[in-house]
Length: 79
Image (cartoon, rainbow, N blue to C red):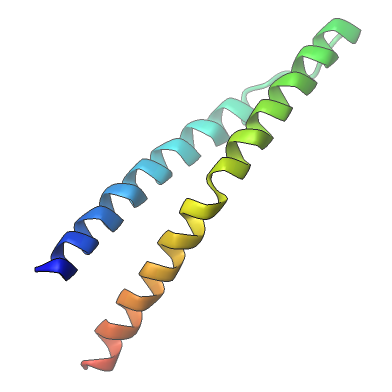
């Protein structure tokens, strides 16, 4: 029963992470090149915000990868 709960949490976290990643990639890809200094400073600030947000996901990403690897190993060890 505990394994089913872990799997459900993993899938929920993975779905959330994928949605966040897709949105972040789209946001970054849609940024235009700055025309002046003010726009460049604004873009630099936005990039710093994206960097900070990405760094906040490092631990969650590592946990998902570890759990995913355990699931993969269990699935292929039993076959």
